[in-house]
Image 1: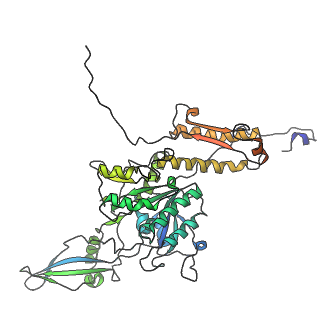
Image 2: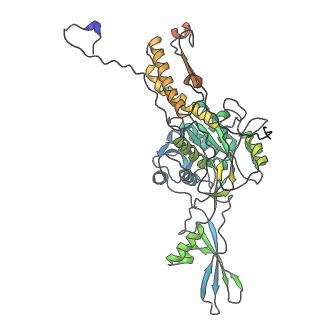
Image 3: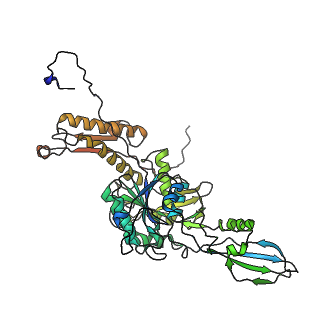
Length: 484
């Protein structure tokens, strides 16, 4: 439609006038990115020295385990021995079999490449779409090795992806330098300003305080961009065993009719079962009972997803049950929990997972790693600011190179205010009225000087009173004197 000053032909003209301000579309808040080793990474190439170049790392978005298996394969097969008692009669004929104990996996001997299992536990706890950042195949950094330098390449490669909002490195607990990864994840989130790191506290002792003391020196800077969780979880996730290629040994003890026991040399499961499919299934059923202990990060990411979906990113992801587990590696008491939750020296809070009789196993902490900071103490406050900042940033690109005048300022302010009113109505902001919940300021003499305008700067100030969790609920009881 030509401008009115250019009309020259008599006639009737239509102009549509927009009276509504532009809108802010809320970005996704719970899209985790998992960095680690995979069985395969089709389409990627290794450098000549055997290491993976950052440019070759291509994050892939998946929605379920089937997609993961298609792109990246399965878990690394484990090696285990199963005990079998064979009872025989006087003629040495087999009468029955017994499996005297559930096979136990030594955490120090199992594969350190737990990405596949971590994803299983993530989806089991409500997880949805996520990114996989493959940084190498099993053994690419040496048999059973997890390299901090290689994992850091995954963080660098993730900078080119805009969508992820949560960062997890499940295998970092086995890295040759855990501090490099944990601090690197926080630095990455601070640089990108639209994501949050979930860190695991290494749980290699029965003393929570010793584990906390070992972890806290690893995180120094940018602690408001991450949270840590403890202890490890006893899960119902099943190990992968290669039962056809020597991955499982069967140790047979023959028991004679008179009770005499004779131990046989261990043999491959496939050789032991022969052609008996029923015996093979019986042994596989026993193997499926082997307990797997995993760091809590993947399950916590699932909790973030389900909390964001059910309530909103402004709700603290705590007092939520964890599923697909049988218990905790370490059970904490109130005194131990208090020391982890509140660090009076440096404020490096560690969120605890606890089991409560009749209520289940719950996430019982919602602090960032800067737990003494009045502004950024809580996970939900930091993540809500990330959400609003990123949403407003993307919506504001339409105003770049628009006239820096009152008309533009009014449109920008109206756009942000309308978005924040929706958040206030959803329960994200405190206050009985919108002006008690937030403010949006923009204008000459208010947020900008004439010099700002001359230099092309449009400055908007936004303040928000984000809801904070009721971490400590105190009831005060007292006697009331009877009234006459």
